[in-house]
Length: 345
Ligand SMILES: Cc1cc2nc3c(=O)[nH]c(=O)nc-3n(C[C@H](O)[C@H](O)[C@H](O)COP(=O)(O)OP(=O)(O)OC[C@H]3O[C@@H](n4cnc5c(N)ncnc54)[C@H](O)[C@@H]3O)c2cc1C
View 1 (tube, rainbow, N blue to C red):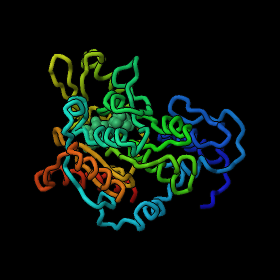
View 2: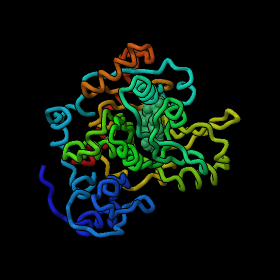
View 3: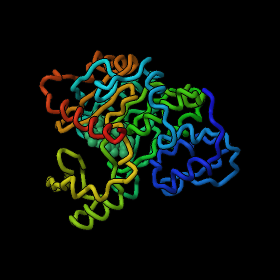
View 4: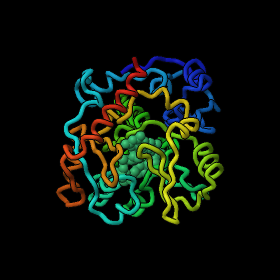
């Protein structure tokens, strides 16, 4: 694919100043001259720009070639009826691994797939989001290489984690075979990298797991200002945060306190309002909780994704229940996908 020559100043600087930047860090990671730095969640030009155009080409906010990417992944574009993208099969699944079940967000499908892929040499690393040592629930991009690390990174942090930065770490190993876990905006960038292709990254990527995502919240707003400040909960005492109709904050004293989504909205990142993809439509596998407790709604989209899932199932590490038993979750998937897609029109 040919890349339009354009400088960072002419393209992405405007995206940043217009507050449209998602902070995915793809431009920073892929600048061939390493002229961009990731500063306060945004790219900053700190070196020479030769207007190669790669940063603009990759940016999910500049000119995302959505239809071309669908063709690249699935061999065709999605139809208007395919509310949440192209897929092969939907399953309601959960892990059979007790240790994962204790720390995962929903059914532990993501951590189980990564674990089985690592243990069996399908991948030698996975790009996920870990937790900062200093700030509870503050997400940090992380490259994990063994099941113990996968376990440490399980669960959801609802603030933005530029996982692309960990992908850059991963591809330094020329033998890397990586899985990438991320939000829809990040999966889109990954597919764009594969399609171009940016060979170093495309070669290292084995499969992608997309997380369904309505929006992300600023850490300073949701965690520090609201949960700590307004609700008076010491963040060190928070054991889990989940969203099931409202934001549920569980603490060490086994209490669960709720924050209405209308109240939390003030802390949502404004750029997330520009996103039109709820269910990570270009991932090999998409996962979401969708109001269920202890189960992950799992969309197997590509052959690779389906094979990975079936492999874990054959090893007895994932169990499923009929999707008909969770009609509400599927209806919610359709509703949230349509809501986001409407922004495109
Ligand atoms: C910001 C955000 C918003 C979400 N919003 C929704 C929603 O509106 N509706 C819905 O149904 N599902 C949503 N999800 C997905 C849901 O929370 C679960 O991640 C998903 O159901 C998988 O659960 P699991 O138990 O299989 O995953 P687990 O086995 O617990 O694994 C979760 C994986 O996600 C990674 N991760 C955690 N936080 C982040 C982050 N901030 N960015 C990138 N990776 C991360 C972890 O490192 C881990 O590998 C959201 C996830 C995120 C990160």
